[in-house]
Image (cartoon, rainbow, N blue to C red; front, top):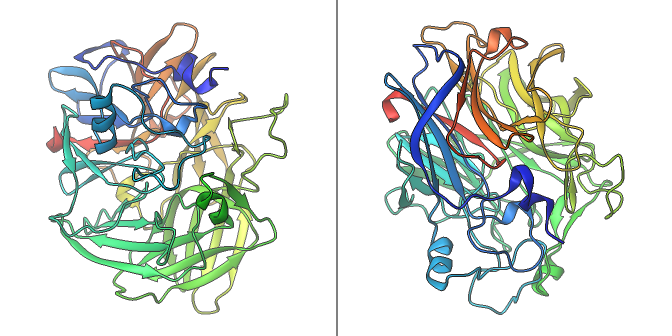
Length: 464
């Protein structure tokens, strides 16, 4: 049986393009110049065995908006594994759902750099959700330039969702790819592309991490009770366990720390794929994120009520707030809404300081992970208003692009791909973030179908 994540909106594409894109409605704002780029899985060769959506080779799609118009580009991320399979002319790795040979000299999982994108120190980097080699790709051509080594100083892997401090230009990242201590490391690189430090963090075993958060002075670590079954891994099987009886822990580590001086806060068990933002308020760290009560479905077989099933994972994340008091060591939490949303974004100029709004893609009532709109949340009250993509239209992760000279955190545009299931077409949408419920400011038809994918970034005008 062919995976749902190889069909329809997810079906891989085989061609790479560099061609004009056409405005089909509205106008591109004259101040909006830069490039929307989005990463995602796109297997080049037929998968070996059962395919999981996370397995596909990385492919970056982008639309550059310049004074001469819009231009669409897509390119494979040519990682070391991609090159090895290209030479062989076939898939060499089995995917996440398949057993592997633990005695093989080849790594059990193919590092595809297919998950995230970050614009840092004048370069665009791709990264992988299990922690791998970050890959530097060019802009606007999206050609693979090679591994990012930070001048040869980077000795660890890098997980997805590293953070760039908009005030200092620092990159804060983490690595959880080791099955022996240290199971977690936190790194900081400066705005000039140089690694400053890599700090080992003492946790009890390997975890399935996916994100962090930063404030002006701290890094927030998420030690959650979803863990690798190490015995199964040693036997050549991948299995993740979630323990609803164990607490979740948030760690607060000073950004300038050179040793592990993490302060830990316990809260009831949960899982978090993606944080929204964190900031300091007196002695408290305030964190917003999309919380999942239990990421493992009750049954291996889908039911009519199943939503956003990813094989052994099921996504029903909702908006929550946590307050971590560094003076008392106590944590408070509250749920802000009950609508399912994921892949949240904010105005990145406000990352790490208090911001009022977030923009959360709304999880559609579909058996696979699809987003049918974007909820603009007020993070103080939890109230939200939504932009609906329309019938049989589904979007990707948006980016927020501030209007030049803006003083309010919602004065700008949301930019995202939207895919039409009936027509088999893809567009880039530009939405006025202040008027979220209105029709898009511009709809730009790209000259090829773009499969549904993962995470996105904005490359500023000077980057293209």
